[in-house]
Length: 386
DNA sequence: TCTGGGGTCCTAGGACCC
DNA sequence: TCTGGGGTCCTAGGACCC
Image (tube, rainbow, N blue to C red):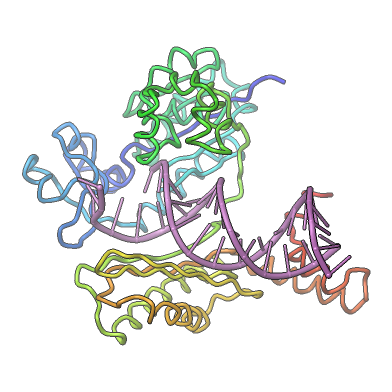
């Protein structure tokens, strides 16, 4: 079986670029997008701003200090959502096998598409040009036989870079990279790897299994495979969210229960809107709270039916709240989070229900118990097993 | 080191079922 | 009645990513 051709396409400095796309007068200027809250940090900085030392996560006051001409814009998630969809639509016009990695990046299987091109590189150049001309967004592209290598490739030569990584080039192009540049290795793992003498991806690829096992546990082989340049090339086109949630940090801690309830309800109203806009309901409700002393507690509850009304959600959340209300010295509340998971589209839920009703009515072989245990047959399962 | 808000995936223990 | 293997689901927490 010959290798697939996977692209990873990543929009450069997406939030900042989105504002520049909307307002061409910002072109070539140092731009930073940030939240409006006091003492805010840079969420996304344009490359012009980065050249002057402005980095994301930097305090706004400091960014202004080192770059007084910095143009600050307020984050606008509707704008990003809109551009993100247009970006995905454009890519999908080349191949239906598109997997969104996040709001600003996609993995695409172009194995078939590139047959119409002399080289994969030509397709990459065309896409990069079209995204820039039609959406005014700069993108980086990585081309490789699997998702991991494509992702690593798109991270090189920013901005407006195109990088091909062939399997045989892993040793030359991937192994010299510092271990912290490996996708999937984060803050917590880096120091542990350094401790055992692993500083590059090549070091990881060649480390004794036993040493890695202490760090990665059951996932050791997966990381070794990635470091060796082997990884999944399967594109998952299912874009339905697995969870939706809201969280908010308060600069002024909440002390009154009434105020707390209002804040919780506000978040739930927002959640209800998102759930109803996307036509989904959820079985699991999760609630997290952080107190002034930075202690965070989270509780979740799974129902055996689906809900998306704010009243229903609020009732469950308050139930979860009372569970630890007395257990923690309630100082002020600094942070709240409400989220829904175990999500299903209303169509699917109704389909299940009708299937269940039909089975009961016509007395088909399946008992109530059996259906319950298998969590009801769903559309995707039927497709998978047929 | 974390600032923030949106997510995904994994683990480990317990309950429960066959 | 007990032991054991295989499996799923739930819950809490952690790591990571953008």
